[in-house]
Length: 182
Image (cartoon, rainbow, N blue to C red; front, side, top):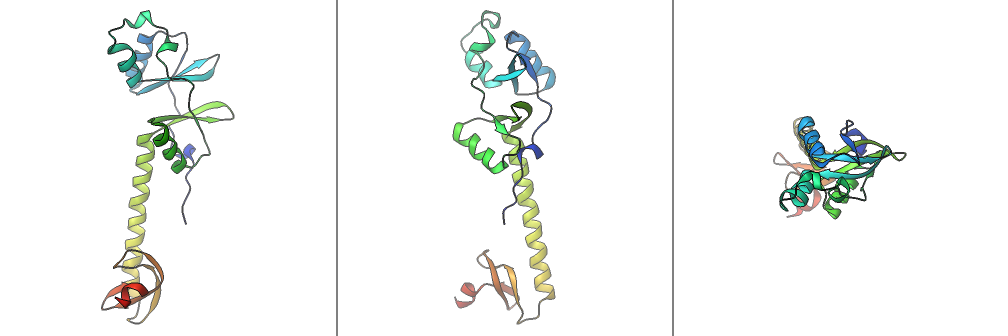
């Protein structure tokens, strides 16, 4: 059974935003001030775009353009690709990979409520993997210690690592039916 974790449980709730009329240098200063890699651009209070470190490098620095000579509209990425707060984190990961972004603003009822990054999602995925490994090891140890030699139990086969509802202890190793036959 797969546990679904909504994006709202892993997102960062404090999002740095600036109005679309803000100068590019001011946006860069905000990124430094708040130690973030992106700023959400708003127009009349609604999120309309995002400026990332990569945007500044590609669209300003590498072109040797004076930041004050550009409007924020020409540097930001728009339209803004968002994710609903209730979306499953696995679906958010797939969306990020498919469209090639590292950050997704999180919306709830059309309002910006947070941002989720690739690092947020990797952290939760690796954390869940570690917890799962601990649970499997706990059950494996308990089954070996508590089970009589001929006992039938369910769990992970110690040979093929597949879940089985019919494990049998063979010479101290819990084996599924397929592995017992070989």
